[in-house]
Image (cartoon, rainbow, N blue to C red; front, side):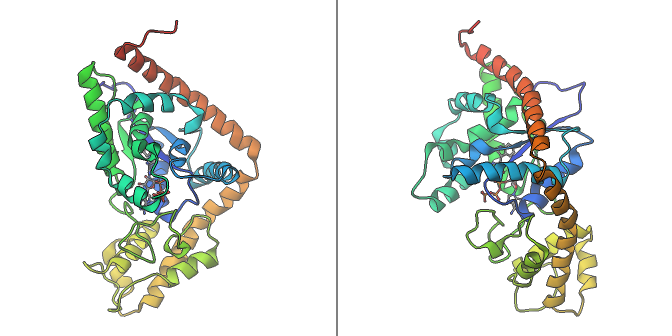
Length: 336
Ligand code: ATP
Ligand code: LTN
């Protein structure tokens, strides 16, 4: 592993602009990103190259990308502290992904559960990009010599593959890539669907009642929590077999900072109705300032453009250095 002695540890993470960003994305990933910005050198990206593994409507895709950029700023990603860019603006990602495809085995990619899930969901479009998704993700991370990658628990398998690819390349040539570690939060790592608590909350869920979008208006948030699936024993307690209640407790704990014991005490002898209302209200209050800031950013296109251009320039310099090293080690004849 290449030593990273003088600088703060490097963090890289990304999210796809594939639709409306959910409370799951926020509690599993984004909230963490924001709090890591002071202690680490952070690089964050909108993984739009990943997004076209599922067919996108061009105008909507463009709009989603700009809105996701503004929403992440509203969540607290600070372009003064961190590098925040759009993946397709830095061509080294696609280039290194191609190279890493040649160091990734068919068998490894076939074992990825996200591929199996998405292939089943989009059976009419199981394209090579969907299959090779993890080697593009590895390229994202390895270009920046990231030490840590904050993600939700669903990305653990992709991170493991990234480590294997890095180690394989390093031992075939010489130390080139930092082998990254995952950084998965204890609470919020897997927020479940409000309608089917055995499945993760997902922005591409066809049932909008399953997820809470960060931009859902307060009355919609309240309605979704009131309709959340629980169980029949009417007791607010964290326990096996109570997936719906456990999920609501996890969300409530994340947005209020309360422990499970405190929550159990707070709702002792009270029904699920009260509990769901309290969770809904706490989420509404948590989202309120984010939604206000979003409105301000999305109205200022010039500022957004300046931010993402500057981000791409800074990211491009770092990525270019790693890519040049890789090309040289492999033995490509230099262009000049
Ligand atoms: P899609 O539904 O389009 O597959 P997604 O909602 O899974 O998207 P991604 O863009 O793939 O979102 O993931 C962004 C980040 O959010 C990742 O770090 C991922 O681990 C995290 N994340 C996604 N869903 C959840 C969830 N339900 N709970 C916690 N973290 C999540
Ligand atoms: N596949 C990720 C998004 C992503 C990512 C990355 C996360 C793309 N590139 C690099 C961390 C590091 C997902 O969350 N579904």
